[in-house]
Each structure stands twice: as structure tokens, then as C-alpha cells.
Image (tube, rainbow, N blue to C red; front, side):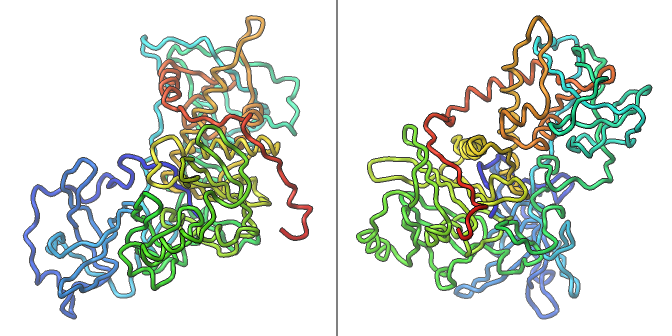
Length: 546
């Protein structure tokens, strides 16, 4: 299932170059909108009036996915091209610009990045921070971190570059230096540092910095490297070529159809909150026509009416998620739930989560998964805030399969708390981990933010010894944080901290980076306290049956 952690202002915003805003509503021409059969048909594209986040009218291009008639009035379900599917909605005839209608070609399918049917969800624009250039105002920070690399002398780097390509033991970097061309490999624990490798000297920010340039733009990015592609949620690298035998929840977009592309639940009442779903979820067909779907907030069972819910609450003994409470600090608790022992709860949790997750597949077989549910406690019980799931046995070092903060609790720091807790479990297990790809647009931004803050916290806490400049390797950062090496490297490149100087790569922290990090950490009030965690990892490989 997919990952959604916190909403992002402008997520789903129209891409540059698309249909612009109209100064006023266009004059409708009913005759122009008619198909040869005499009506607007599914698959048509035309501008549709909507309000943007600034409360201004705009006319983005949209595709009509469905048409229905209610009491003689037609409604059209539209998907805004290059917007996220969570913005899809039913609109009336008055919001359509019929003068610019585009009828579908015969047997045409909505193209996607992968050539599969279905509309490509929008994603946030990739913003690559500019390199820290000296302007006479920015002073060098005393903390200069040295990266140690293995530098083979007789191997040339691949020319060209793309700054997003993560460094790895198999990727190449070419320094922007006319007199030096070398292939650079990150030092790994299994690779001893050769004797010719010496600690790099400090690189002052005096304008002569050479930024590391990555591999050729035409190359495909590795599917196990995160944070370098704004369209990672629908990347071709993220789609399995064959069914996996493990518990992966990656969605195969080739199964998209007109039904799963449309929201089918109008509203969900969960405790004191009413939630408006973002995406399709396979609840029973008879429930999709209800104005409100009622859920028990403790066992997550669904009912047709408020009376059904009230009758259920008189019988439901749960006041917290089933399973073991493994963490509690203040009002925040985490419960570990086995997908095999608590199958009904796990399936209901997946159904609810699918309403807000678009890029994963819902499995009714929850046996291969563990679910970690975060709750907030009050006098009435433990109320679900969010959760993440993980495979009991992951062959690809995944420590998260799905992650979600429910909409009422978003933008309050709970998303990062879920991510931090997942890495805290990895530390106890003695492993490095990474979330299952592809991530949603919001999940991608949340993970980037967490990785950046965590790594900068490590770098800024380093102290020099005997007057020498502090040094640290990629592997040491990975071991301290339990963040996978590829994610560490991609984050350093995303922050543009890696610079090339005199045959070595060093990390340079500018004042802007430091100030921005300190401001972000002041806002991050919720943190995981490892002393409050009571967790014993299990070796699932030794169990014949879960």
C-alpha cells in the first residue's frame, strides 16, 4: 500500500506549460461538446473550472472518466491532467469549457510514463538546491566533514552528469576538474581502504568549489535509490516485471481500469472525525452508494448506518488496537500487530488506508506483514493516528511497506514520528533499512525531510580531535542512523553538500544549511525516546509457519 505522511501545499499543482488560467468563464457552446452519438462521452478532454490553493479560478485540462444522470441532471467525473488523482471530482455541466473539447481517438488509451493504461498521477516538482557559491557574504562553517573515497588511478569516469544520480559502489562520478578524471567508489565495510587513500583537507567556501557531477542524464536510475526522481511513484523501475513471492505491496499499474481510477466512497466517519477519501478502496459494492460509511475507531469494522455502529459499540470490547503495546511516552503509543494473528483488524486497516494510498496493492492475505499502529490516548481510549507496515522477512532490506498518517492528524509532526520509529526498530534489529518503492509524492517529500534532518544532525554533532578537521564515512553515517547507504548518498547530493577538491570529496556545510536545519529542528517537537521502547525482534526465518 502506498505512503502518505503529510500534505504538501501545492501538491497536485498544475505543471508549467499546461493550460493557463482564464480571465473569465468561457461561453459554453453545447453543440461543440456533442459526440457523433449526441452527448459528451467518456475519454473527452477539455478545460474545467476549479479553485486553486490561492482561491483563484483556473481552467486546467481535464479528462472525463465517467458520466452519470441524477434527477435529470448530468454530472461528470473528471481527472485533472498532471494533477494528483486525489483532486478528481464530480462537476456539473456549467464548469466545462465546451469550446475546447477534444474527443478521444478510436481505441486510444490515456498514455502514462510506462505506456500502461491509466492516468499518470501528478507529483511535486523536483527542486534541486543550488550549489553553495561564495558571494563574499557566506562565511565558512568551522565544521568541515571529510568523506573518504577509494580512488583507482587508471579508470576513467563516464563523461556527462546528472546531479540527481545517487552515489553507490557501482555508480560513477566525474569531478568538474579538467586535469583529473577518475572513477570514484564509496568506501564500504567490505572494501578495505587502500594505503594511498589519505584524509582530505578542508575545502573553504571561497568560490572555487567544484561540485560533484553524476552519471549521464540518459541513464535509468536505480530502482533502489530513492529521492532522485519526482515521479518515483510511477517510475518504470518501481513496477515489478513478475509477481513477487514475498509480501511486497507495490502496485502494478497495468491493472488500472475505469473503476479503480474513481473514488468509490463518499465519506468515512471514524470516531469524532469525518474523512473524505482520496482514492479508490475495494469496500463491498453495496457500501459505495452510501453517503457516509461508519467505522469503529477501535476495531475498524464498517457499518451501513449510525445505528449499526451504535449497536456494534455496545458489543465491541476493544479500546485500543489488538496486539502488543511496545512504546508509550505521554499520550503517544505504538502497538505491534501480527497480520496472521489479527487478520480481521489488519484487513480492515488496509481497506481504510487504501482510501488515502494510491500506489500500492491491497492484499487480503496479511500473514507476511507486521503492522505498527500509532495511537493518541484520552479518557475514551487509544485513537488511531497512523500506521506503517513491514514484511516479516524482507529480501531487499525494506523496513516499511506502507506508511500513512490519517488526514486529521497530518501537518502535526506525526509523519516524521512514524518514520523515526521505523528506523528505531531497525536499530534494535541491527540492520539498515529503506522504505519500499515507489513512494507517493507526499511520502517522498516526508522521507527526504527526515533523512536531511537526521544526517545534518549527525554532521553538525561531530567534534574535531587534536585540532584536526572531523572525518566521517558514508558507512559510518549509515550505521549510526540505520538509513541505507544509497539513501544517505542521495540525500547528501540532494542537499548539495558534496564538493570536489584536490582529488577528494568533502562535505561543506554553509550557513544557510545550518540555519535552515536549526529552524526546522525547533519546530520538530515530537521525537522517539528509545528508553520507552520495549521491543524484542523475532527471527522469522526460523519459523516454519508464521
